[in-house]
Image 1: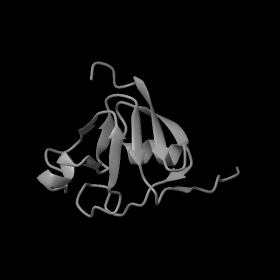
Image 2: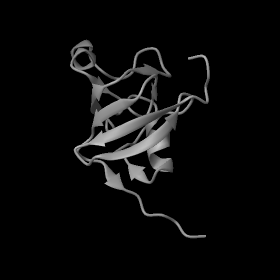
Image 3: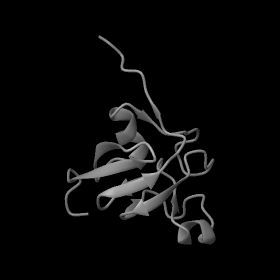
Length: 104
């Protein structure tokens, strides 16, 4: 990616929620900044608790081989904790939830 600050839109289905992400940040980080929670635990691509399906778009991983089988990758599954957008995305994350907004 030429520009780490380039922004993409991520749509979370089936909720229909959307958020912006920079090319330099993981989908998990960007979702949290938009007050959208995606299940997670390890944040390094091994526990698989954040696994969801990429319905449209393209991602690139921060690690060489995230904790997905070749079949899962072929079937469109991704790990948002280590995936960065390389286009606008649609992800199927039925366990997504709204995060509480902290007041200052």
